[in-house]
Length: 114
Length: 109
Image (tube, rainbow over all chains, first blue to last red; front, side):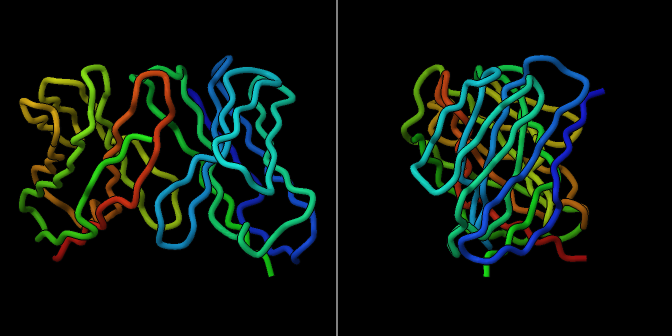
């Protein structure tokens, strides 16, 4: 069966520090991968998605970047965090980008920038 | 991005049916409707999706209006574990799922 792992689960970082969140998927090949962010009490905002190794699409301009160095690994990074980067970050995968594909989410990483 | 409209919150009593409405007036003929729900401090989980016909699964039923401009997620017997934020998403073909604010469902014992 397929599983998705995200880490770290929580972190507190000072403004201006770097960030690296990792996500890996097991039990499937060539998944579509996504990074979402959720501010407190709000809906999910799609940040990045990837249909293959090295292929990253950005949905919104921001202080963050994403990379996919391996088929089932998706990394969210920042060189210098802002206060507004605080939130709940969710990685997700799907088998297809078509409109019948189900999204499977990880447990999330809660980031607090101080 | 395609946008849906949902009530901010709804309340239900345990073991009673719940009807969660969603308006998607800009929907086109090939756009699917997806429903997800999110428990506190967890990632969303898939509930159901459909295109034109009503759909049933073990979690819920999805009733889609004939003109497809609205749909209703039906939980046949609400339990306390169904308390969550429910997201209705209109997916345009080839695009990604965009989550709105959703409906916070409270289930009273």
